[in-house]
Length: 312
Image (cartoon, rainbow, N blue to C red; front, side, top):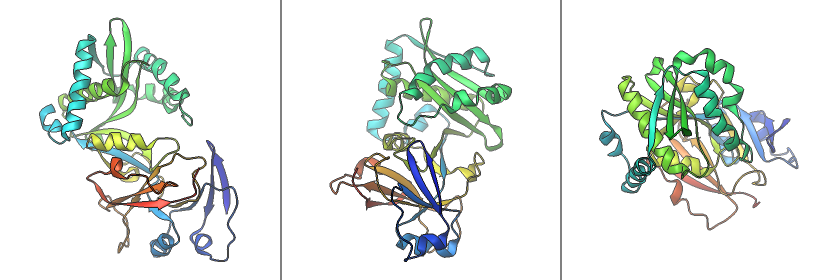
């Protein structure tokens, strides 16, 4: 077993045989036990041993739709009202939207001025956009900034990559100024991204990629937010954005995670391979027997399993 620690999370990486060895003593101090690229023959036994087979990363996508009304028609009434409230908020505040294409250095650096403090405020935030600045600007012809501007101030921005190979506008990074009713402004920004994608003739919009485990680098609320906007997750390796192998993970304790945490898993019952159409399930990981799974229901899920682990 190899033990790794990153961003406060301690992971024991095992082979499938090690994970299934009943005589192997538990290792103290681990938050997760994980098997990388587990062989299909081991999936049923790993599941019985408390492991879930899942993609390492997921990418969220939604059809662009022929119009904004067509897209909004897919949302719940509550979410349509939230989008409308965001657009009215932008109008009331005199916010105008600007599309910068191709992306230029001043626009990207103005975005970073919003983004970096937002990431710094997160418990385990990683400033990927700042780390990738040189590469992004080298590929600026494939990038677009959708900006929200109030007077002379940038109050929100999405940095998007154009994936012409899959006809998709990928929202890679987004940020808003503090105190701008962030969720409302974000929804208004996203509607402008959809408009831009339609104008470019792109078939889909993506809300970017996340680890399949929500509760560490990302929070469960992000999963609920993206699914409420009727984006559907696909394993990132099938989207061509990452090539990380699938994993089998057992969460041993929640000390370094939120309670609840979420793990988006494959439904591998009866399967002998994993493909882009493999159904997905949700493991809701909690130490509280009264945790309500309702906020995390989504139409793409085959089902939800409440998994009780050690309380924080």
